[in-house]
Amino acid sequence: MNLDEAAFNKQFNSHRLQQLDNNIYFGSLPSLGDLETLRNNNIRFFIGVDIPTETMAHVYTQSNLINLYSPQGMQDIVMINFDTSIVPREIDSNDPTVPVYIKNNTMMLNQLVGHLDPEIFITKQTIYGEKRNYNHLKSNVFQLNNYTMFEQFNDWVEIFKSTTNGVLIFGDHENSETLISLLMSCVIKKSSSLKLVDAFQFVKSLKNDSNDNIQEQNIYWNSGLLMYYEAIRKYSMSWSINKKPLSTTSFFNNNNISPNKKRAANLPPPMAMAMPMTPTSPTKNMLVSTGAFDRCKRARSD
Image: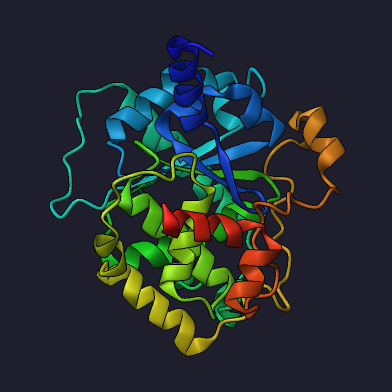
């Protein structure tokens, strides 16, 4: 292999999607260009992290995503983005793609929330926030920070994945500290007995690039992540016990699901990537069962 081939492979691999859990994937902004992988995993929900709304709007209206599943385009996917800047960014009102992006996706979100069983907001076994937080949304852009962001982020992940469609969480690059922190919050929500360092090592073991310069202290001392972590531990929430399925299966046209996804619908997730289904499984058992334990040890020794 020559240097050019090595460079190409490195760049290609850095944009591959990685699976965090059943129907949940993560990656970088360039990974949205891998349309075949998106279709094969029936990914219809897209969550951007710290990506300018103007950029999200351009991707939504001007990229090949618009025809990902059918000529219906904008009726087949839903996009939201989280902006964690201390001073909320001003959205460019002169950009014609922004109002289309916000209007269409906000409408789709409100329709989706209308399909939800109200009981899930009462039992707190699935959705952590109050239902009033999701009624009559005005925008699909959430300019949040600290604990509120982690709460609403995980609520939307839960709502999206309960439709049985795939969810892609992405930052402008894979080593975004905000992206990694949010992915860690998904891990500890699923396995509440884990420590933050275990959640970090698990996410790191899945990333395409494990030799990075992530400032780990910025993640471990993220006040929002710490508060969310303590809330999960305090209440020992059993997120996957007695959980009613959400009545959202008709939200998208099932005829648009790719043949590959239909064939694989009843197959178990790849054991090398899927998190355990029991929220209280011990740390070591979780990492061993997913094949990540050895990779975590290698990451610590690198």
